[in-house]
Length: 194
Ligand SMILES: Cc1cc2nc3c(=O)[nH]c(=O)nc-3n(C[C@H](O)[C@H](O)[C@H](O)COP(=O)(O)O)c2cc1C
Image 1 (tube, protein in one colour):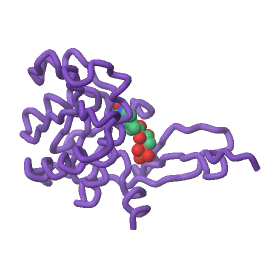
Image 2: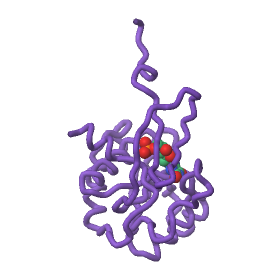
Image 3: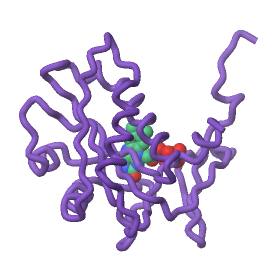
């Protein structure tokens, strides 16, 4: 069951705009993320939540999606996410950004697994304009966005495939819009003496 959840938890770039994500649901996801491991248990992360249409659009316009498929201009009109959680570094707690990045990954994956269990899905986004986003959110000086997470009910089909012989790891789509994500095979990623 756990493996099914991990398999289902893909990066989605198209959502059902009629399925709103409530603040309560967002709080539940953050409640799972906030109890994960943290280096020296400093817990330097804060979580900005947005689920109002105008604000979601404002955040979306400051992010970049699907860098390997620029011609598709994802997400398409009518398939925008319905919420965002933005993971922030509280520099008053930990000023060193590198020291919080592992915490961010653990929190983000946990949040997305919790979303997947609820029939939701998301996308981690590192490609955003830091200054425009910080200004738009009106964040105080100690809070810096590190990872934007889009959320909603996914409408896309995503399939995992082996990395082809030519080694190309770029994701791609077929004529039906099915999204394929090449992953390195188990024997390629395991290192041992024998
Ligand atoms: C730290 C991190 C940052 C990412 N940033 C972006 C991004 O800015 N824009 C985007 O469209 N996808 C982004 N992704 C999604 C990756 O493209 C995606 O994880 C990869 O294609 C593999 O697909 P999968 O998540 O379904 O396994 C990011 C993923 C991670 C883990």
